[in-house]
Length: 347
Image (cartoon, rainbow, N blue to C red; front, side, top):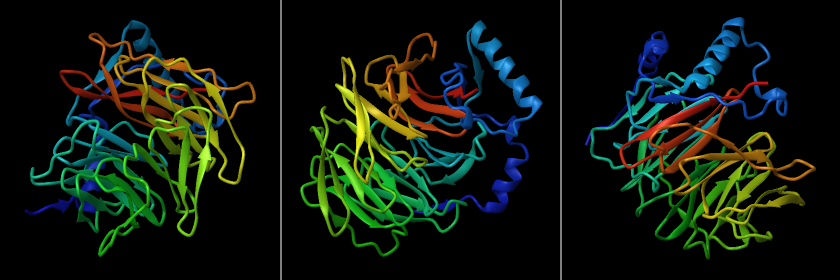
């Protein structure tokens, strides 16, 4: 089988027409932060951005604004303000600089299967990594130097500057970020892991659904107890803290000690989690695809709010969340299709 990255020159050429390209986005404006996170929006946003925001708010009042598709999103990852989304055939699409205009990043020959709610994608300065039915694809962030690493039914994946970690039938496995020539290491006792994250120092945090977060730091391992069962973990790339969420609570852990949590009244377990600048975003299976969010590091504790999508019929499951400095993005699926929803972050 022949698989090739989209050449960088082609990407640059496509970018010139990206504003008019199909995007696979439902845009439904909410204002989740009001004045809570003044640093989340670029200080240099233009008058045109402001006009666009006003138009989006008007569209939200009227119902919603829909941009055409182009691909079906199955998972999402973010590196800074660059967003990567995987499709059912194992291809990847990219939107640069907090834009909502996606273009091809990597295209396979149709021999891969990327399963919704099973496979995942991760992005870091070391590259873009995504799991498919038979292994892990990887490329440098510019779409070059691509390769494939066979693995036994890999699922969730996370990456840092020097380490890639994923979950397969053996447990949590790790390799240097390049993956070329990798001989994976399996973390002892990690079989049954549900969610994982790579911490800034290169260690791996993971949970098996119990009331502790396991942290493997290479030479040492430790268990971090929390008050509630943990369904998902994620590293806040801005603060460096480890966020977590479960059916009973949400919180964060500082890797040098300390943290906080708040109780939740969920009826089902969360299935997706993303953290940025002290804010955690998570979603519940079978809860109309709603994304919940709150400041996990607030002195008054977490007070969850909803990002309402307003779609009819309502979607059923959220399959991935990410945030740039401008938007929150979520992959939401129903029995009919999977879509990418976007909410603008405004002061």
